[in-house]
Image (cartoon, rainbow, N blue to C red):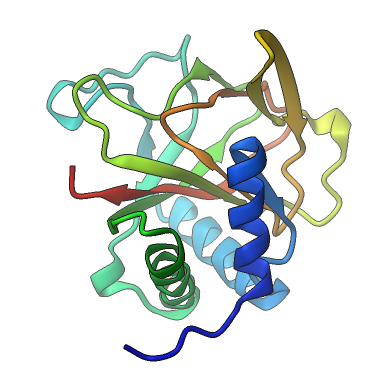
Length: 208
């Protein structure tokens, strides 16, 4: 096996996950990579390739606007090009690093673009399904305008448990920011947005 080169960025994520079950990284992807993904998302949204999001497993999906209001487009790694190919290349490197340093057994992933139109939200939830524990890490990278301001809303609120007391953490969706957290542990929500909110979102998964 090749000698593993220490990656300070990935080590920070690991330390954060071990210490607080989530990590916020503002330079996981380069500015150029983020802008390529943003351009791709907007082009495909304009081409009407997105669909209304649903809740539940694919075999029993339901569109419930009172729960979530985003539009999504699932990404196919095998047919990815441009910014999406770069995105998956970097994620594969991160996945291998986690498996070699933390023995997480991650061998699957699923990601989609997400666009929240003005006035939409996603109610508090956990990123796992009943009788399905494959999702280990949730990841979201924000592709918003550079001038995103707090008054635009759309923050990700993560609910922590500190000594039996609930502590909500608000994370603003600044362009290029990556948030990584434990899928089976942390409940979270997307607060109502005042302007379109863009991201690429997904999960690193085990075989089961």
